[in-house]
Amino acid sequence: MCDLLWSDPEDIEGWGLSPRGAGYLFGGDVCGQFNQANKVSLIARAHQLVMDGYKWMFHDALVTVWSAPNYCYRCGNIAAILELDEHLAKNFKVFEAAPQEARGAQSKRAAPEYFLVRIAMRRGAGLFAAL
Image (cartoon, rainbow, N blue to C red; front, side):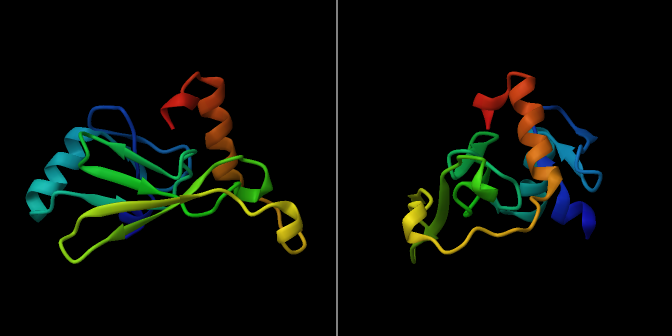
């Protein structure tokens, strides 16, 4: 179950080790095999920060949707919600964080490091635009 919930798509072939310490990284070939074996055309997932609110991968066989704008008050990301109609047509509702004056007090909880470390790793590796 952990592998299913914590694994992340990546531009690789096959499987790789995840920097989260749980789950794995998987490539488009793995996604395609999963979709074919399970007779689905799309994996819609969350639990991974994407800067534009959503991100398509693997020729639209997978989409990651992130619905927390400006995650931890410092990532500067946009958020999105995926809406499906009765015909399964996809529509993304994209939004930014509410202005500071419209929000309540900022949380004092520390940000989960695995999200922020992954963002920093991607920025440092020049992969930030790929998010």
